[in-house]
Image 1 (spheres, rainbow, N blue to C red):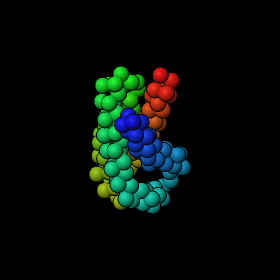
Image 2: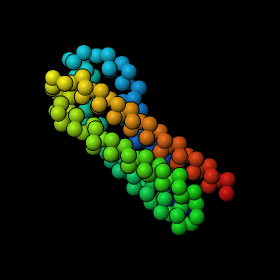
Image 3: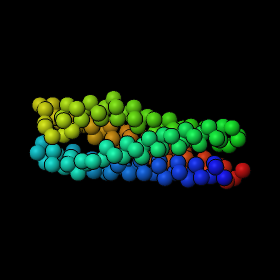
Length: 150
């Protein structure tokens, strides 16, 4: 029963973690066409989204806990580990690609001379995170299917 509950919690957190990265991905194509002032204005839509870090932490902790429980019980461990690694990789992308741009642009309140290059890095880092979040959700779903087939 604990595995089932933890699987549901993991699904919820991983799905919620996909929301902001998916939103960034789908907005990216239109935002890349904006001029500097338009881009700065569009970026204000993300004010307060740092609170999603709580969701990412929940996704990391719940998938790690689920992996530990599955390892001990002989369940489909590898797929859940891949979900955890995917979520962890989103953080690697954030801290190495997104966060430095946030610092250089003061969270997109100023436009440095190289703002277009920074915008590309910022947008593509979110696209990478969206792909990793989607992978985490997919493999978590696959692990549940394997568990139910057993």
